[in-house]
Image 1 (cartoon, rainbow, N blue to C red):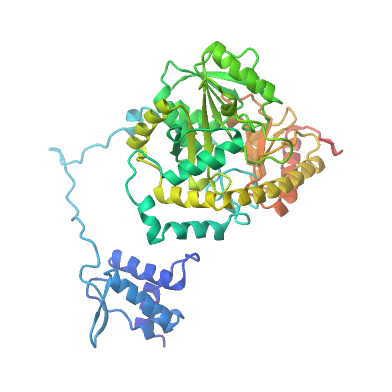
Image 2: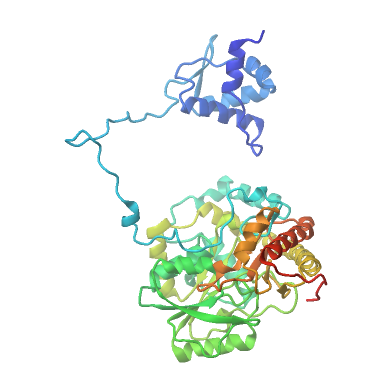
Amino acid sequence: MPNPRAIQWAQLFALPDQPGLPLQGRLRAAVVQAILEDRLSPGAPLPSSRELAALLGLSRNTVTSAYLQLMDEGFLEARPRSGVFVAHDARPLTAQPAEPLVGRSGQSGQPPEWSARVLRSQLDRPTLSKPDRWRDYPYPFVYGTYDPQLFPTEDFRECCARSLARSQLPHWTPDFETDDVPDLIEQIRTRLLPRRGVFALKEEILVTLGAQHACYLLAEALFDEHTRVGLEEPGHPHARNSFAMRNPKWVEIDVDDDGLVVDALPAADYLFCTPSHQSPTTATLSLERRQWLLRKAELQDFVIIEDDYEAENLYEGTPMPALKSLDKTGRVIYVGSVSKSLSPALRLGFIVAPRALIKELRVIRHAMVRHPSAFLQHAYALFLSLGHHESHARRVNHAMQERLALAAQALRDHLPDFEFRLPSGGASIWVQAPAWVDAAELALMARSHGVLIEAGDVFFAKPPYPCPFFRLRLSSIAAGQIPAGIRALGMAVQELAQARGERLSATPRTH
């Protein structure tokens, strides 16, 4: 008959499902959780290391090491000839729950009506989104995740470990107030920017929590309800939503196969653009248009906010110089990302602008988040200085080329009525379906086939209906899944066509 005490211990110390932690770490986590949740009271005895090792199927050394570390950290204490016990001060002091306040009627007061109090709600603004369990879908053609096959685990671990060396602690542990880690500023200034033809002083660079944070800071400093802000149509929804917090006056700028249409630009105070690979169409702005856009900025007295989106992902042709590199009058604010090719979750970007504006942005950033993680800045500075960034970019570019080719062929084979243009870089394909297709409806139907796509209406300030455009993002899906994913998408299109009474072409089309 099983020992009830042994069963209780086994349930209490069941190891959490954290495969990234070693067994000793998982055991420590289980013990700490039991103590903090008051399932083990102060002074309670623990099983011997031998007994617990047998119950959990662990080595005795693993249990002993976990106990010793928990003693060092003050959770456990050893008593001579008695064993191991929960320390008396293992749990932090907590306030006692208070009785709720009630009015004269004996009823508690009413909570605030937050929907009436919130002045700048973002809840109803369209934005890129994924289902909560999007990783369960076999064919995720969506944004915003790292590729486990490409992530430079050993290189990045080396940089993090070096940053944690005692000799390096003084470089990132102090409070930087409004400043950034000098090593990262230097790497951005001397390694990243010159490849885009941009040369800047350290006083002209500010580190941000990604490119979207950069847009938010610029809106805080520069926009109000009277500011006219030009945006590409279709354009980047995250930038639009960040700018929207200041409620500016929107000015839609047309986009064609060559990017932003510069002729007949409407009047604006600021113009946001993605000239390297236009988001979402992937078009690259020509050198002639770049020069004409800068001339227009002078003639019409507006400032350009350049998001150098996916500039490093170039697969053919010569890199186009950044607008900032051609700017001679200080009319371009440059926004870049340090970490996007590695993982968007790392959230490191930067702004390059005249020092007077950077000085203002530093104070605004300080009021918001003080500064981005100094540890992460220092680790990424090492990542750049050791050449890991360049080697990782080469691997990513090679992989994206392969995925783009696979996706293009699959589109020709399974969706011959759909139009697209193979981009020269980036990690996505902008697809135009036949006019009768609404991509938002197709996206919902595709989910039942295990396919996630990015419906195009979210990229438009004024989306058409039906909106036949959608984006296939290739950074979240393995190359081997792409042909099957687009085949499954083709099945969803067939279902939609049958429901609409439309006929599809059976002949593959050459794009």
